[in-house]
Each structure stands twice: as structure tokens, then as C-alpha cells.
Image (tube, rainbow, N blue to C red; front, side, top):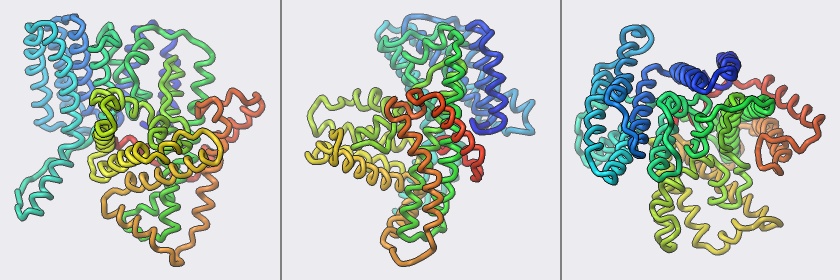
Length: 523
């Protein structure tokens, strides 16, 4: 089930109607059931991973502040993944396949966690707190690392051994990447760290924390919320206001326009150019990367608006994740506008703990490279994503060590500001080519195409097609630029707002492109 499917158009109103009459704990129970149903529509098996992460983080966070839960409660909670997988194997064997290895791992979870939990409580307070913090962090990162990176590093090792003339003869397992694991893992890590640092109190009960971690509007692709801002919205019942309905529907409409009208139609050109068998010339290569730039922007910012709109209908505010990123004047400015919750996560939990910019230029650059390489690898287990992270690290470095570029990024108006935006947009497009290429070979094909300016296939029709679907987005952004919220039209007269909403509605319902899966689902 996706935000743009007919199933979601029935699911969301039903949840909203059932939600508001309930007391707080009733709302939490409804959100948990709805969120597990929403996530289970992708793959029932991976609900066990979400249950396991929920149990670990809940009990570790409580222990961090001296709240010790009973052994019976811990045992029952940690048995939930095994019971779930067992139920799927027995009742759902026609729909899902549960491997014996999965059952064994689920059975090992309570066997390992309960004794470790009890042993850590025998330690002094400082050691206990450090132990529970690292238990939460390392467990989450280990699960993420196995499902997302085991195949990548194993394949890379096999290729390296092969280049050295050795054939290990390994048979590597095919590991399916669970949807949303990168997002809820980072949110879990932030929760444990913030509780440890005293920035937020742990959830008052397991039901509230389960609903918090699995909250369906932002579970699959963010935004990655901060506990200090997000958790209080679950521990205190929201009060109904008509503004929730107005703001929620507005965000849903803008998000649907970005996703269906802009992103899915731009994808037709981008997918054609980046098809593994394509041999584009320079005009087509440039059209393809411009198309992808607006595809990924419309796709992901549209998803964020749809998530924010869905949550707002439930009285819950999600963070803005985009703020006109293609108007950035430099790489630092770009990352304050693009995927804001991820970039701020890496800033606060990786870059600053490494030392940030507190120890001189050389150390700052090292910290930037480490952070951006990890950010690139977060996006996918591929060398192209590592290269993309390195490319952005190189840009960050250049803008710090070259005085002209540093001054250019700080410009706020006039010709220099226009030059800064144009240069950064050009650099961003080149980065998107690295990001979009599925292999280094495909990236090489695209780079080679830039040297081919001989006449080839007519490119004027796809150029007009892109203009048809990009210009309305630009006009919308001009209308929302002053409020600094890409979906806020409050400064327009009500007649103008009504006209804009009507045109957005017509645009997305009349879109001819077939629906494309949200790009960030793969991360």
C-alpha cells in the first residue's frame, strides 16, 4: 500500500474517523494496529524485525533512567517476533515463506536479551547506562548492517579475491532489504542517545512507544523525527481543530501533485536515458539528468508532504524535510534544504560527536568526509552511492578551502547570488548522475554521452514534455517561497488559493504516466 494507491484513499479516512473519538491510549492502540497493517502490506515477515527493535529500545531506554521492568513483561515482549513468525508460518504459509533460520534467530532473541538485560542491572549506574545505550545502538546497527550491507561487502570481497586469482567458491544467500529499516533504525538510535543524554524522557508505556516507532505516515521513508519533538505528541492527546483538516488536505494535494504529475512524468525521460541498454548523446544525457533531478525531488518531497498531510489529519506535526533545495548557494546550504531530517541526524549524531569544526580546518574536513561517506552508504549498498557521498564531501571541502567559493555560498542577493545558485544546481545535477547510475559502467556511459554532440534522435519533444511538468512546479514554488514552506499558500487571497488547489487537482488526476514506486523506498 502506497500513499497514492486507492487502498490508502480508503485506509486513511477510516483511521482518521476512528481516531478522534478515542482516548489517548485508545488512539495509540489504533495507530499501532493501523501501522502494523500498513507495513505488513509490504511483507508480513518484517514486522518481526520492527517488533524486535521496539522491544530492545523500549527496555533499554527505561533502564537508562533507572526504570526496571519485570522479567515476565520482558520475556513476553521479546517472544513476540517468534510468535509472529510462527503464526505466519502456520496460518500464512500460502502467502509468505518463513525460513527455519528466521525462526532460530527469533528464538535466540529472548534467550540472549533477557540474560543481558538482567546482567547489566547488576552493574554500577554509569556502567549500566553505557551498557544499555550500546546494547540499543549496536543491536539496531547490526540488524541494519546485515540486511542492507552483508551482500554488498560479501560480493565486493568475492570480486577482490577473484581479481587476486582466488575463487572462494562461496554461495552467498539472497537477502531481501526490509522496507523502512534505514529510517526507523536511525529514529531508534536517536531515541536511545537522547534518553541517555537527558534530552527526552522515555515513553511512559510499551503501547505508546510501539505506536511512536511504527507510526505509519512516516515509517516507510521518514521524515526521521527527533524524540524530544515527536514523542510528546504521542504522550499527550491532541485536540481536534479544523486547521488539522485544512492543513492535512492541503499537504496531501500538494504531495500528490509533486509525486504523480511532476515525478512520475519526469521519470519517463529519466528512465529512458538511464536504461541499461541506452546509448544517449549529449542533449539526451542532459535531458535525462534534469528529468531525474526533478523526479527525485518531486518524488521524495511529495512523499514528505503526503506523510505530513496524513499525520496532520491525526493532529500530529511532522518536520519539513525540504526547503527549495535547488535554490541552494552551496553544498552546506543544499544540505540544510534537502532531506533536512537526515542531514541534521548525521550532523548531530556523527559529525558533531567526531568533533565537528572545533579542532581546525584539517580535522573539520576529515569529519566531513567520514560523515558524507556514511551518508552516501546509507542511501544504498553500492559503490556508486559511496562515490556520491565522496563527491559531496569533495564539494564541501572545495567550498571551505577556496575563498571565492566560500564567499559565493554566503551571497544573498544580486548577480553573485544568481551565479551561486546556478553553479550549485549544475554541481548537483552531476551528483545526481552518480546517484542515478546503477553501476560504475552506467555512469561511464552517461559521462561518455556528454562528448557526443553529433545529430541523433530528436530531443525537442521530451524537452517540451519536461517543461510541461516542471514549470507548474516552479510556479507553485514561487507562490510558496516567502513562507519558506513548499506547501503553504496562506499569503494568497482565498480566490487565488482556490484556483491553485483546483489546478493542482486537475494536474495530478489527469496525469498520463503510470505510477512509479517512491524512490526512497529502496533505502
